[in-house]
Image (cartoon, rainbow, N blue to C red; front, top):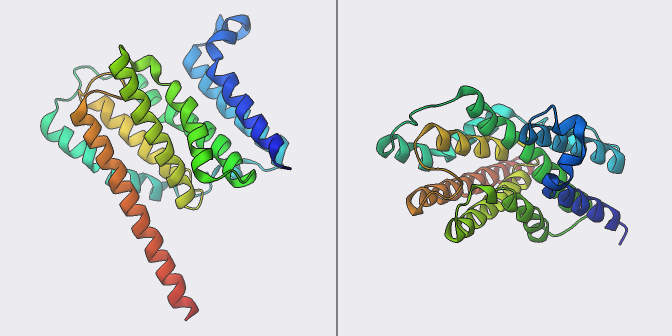
Length: 243
């Protein structure tokens, strides 16, 4: 299979960045002067850009950043309503909100993750190497979920964290493909959900109980329904134009 080199490079890169805590201390120039999480996020973006260029000779256009960002953010605000609307009615606003931490947690880290896991890893596996959607989505969802295990305090929360983050990763991959590789769509939903999670006093980590999880699943359901409706409308318009 001629695309095996793409698959191997993607999987090796995922392993390298999922074991970042092992090699980070051995790079004194970075570990002694720069914050770990924020630097790793930047390195993921840089690695994704360099590897995509080396393998495909394609630049930033490959990542889906040329799509309409306003459409992605509007989609995200509407489809995240099952999260922010109930929280606005039932949950207090977080007692203390650090604007810098909020910006990093709601926008910078989701952007890095969508570039790395969706546009780079899932994109190369599915779009370029031809790996079937579900295999490519799950292969990239596993390390994505593992990277969030630090949020869990016990076995129950670990299982919940793995389940909800893997589901989110597969959903974001599906949205990326369904919206014609417009990365702003999955990024927008990812960012909005992180934002509302931080603004309201929900709890720590991706899994904060069954009620918040039901709200997250509601977001997923609305996102899928809205996407299917958008695709149906476009296909109908295209059919009418050909008639």
